Image 1 (cartoon, helix red, strand yellow):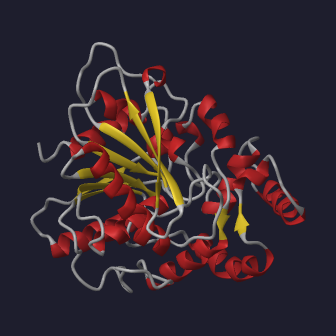
Image 2 (tube, one colour):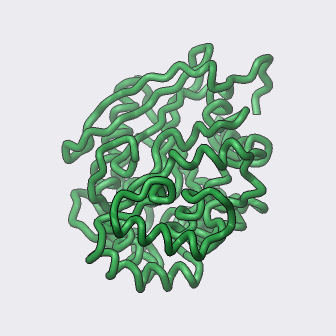
Length: 353
């Protein structure tokens, strides 16, 4: 990590919102964040997961990944794709994001910056959908992808397999979406019933949204982080950072889990039926991050994807980092992530330098 005299903090951020449209006309946004000085390296785009937003990467920590990227000279762009809670909710699948959102976002950043290539840091379902786009050859301008938690091979805990297999058909009939935000603000009879059931079975903390997150996304208590890794301010902050996730996504993920790898469920231009049936149609170098304690997607998810890339590209340029003591989102939200995780990400971004 580059040593600087005065590290960047949130107070130094110069934030611009850029509106653009996805390939199917859906309005999306990119948030450009710069510090006190102009970036001297190229653009890097950060892509959030399902039912959150671009602010995921700017938690109330003294030192966030965005700060580290700015101080390392990068031109930082945060994408709000169709799964963002900052956008009007729509039913979506990974196919929609892979075909329409990510290619359009990459083209916008390239046009806005004049850069020949960009780099991407992608998380969870932002990672699966972005990897689909990359493997299908839809984002040729991207030369480096750092993916967290899951990419081509969703491997989930046994209890999660049971939940997604048995609950998804019922949810399809009962509700168009799930929402961890129901922990604080249930908006109907089904939401209140779900909240009561979750709070009666998840007693890991006094944050109702945190407990709803665990029910929605994994098998742990909690599922997406270790409480020991979050400071109090971040644990409270998450109350406002989770929203609707359509059942259409869970239905696709159930099919992917059964198949053992990503599969498309909608016919979209340029996409593949099976993303592991042939060599990746991308020259981008991939770096896979896997929290050893991840109870949403087990670390074998990233292990298998790294092995797939290594099989087709045995030159060793693609890398795998299994992170002891980390789970799913505490890779970014953890109070010690600046010490444990940021240096790995910065090294991978600077690999070709």
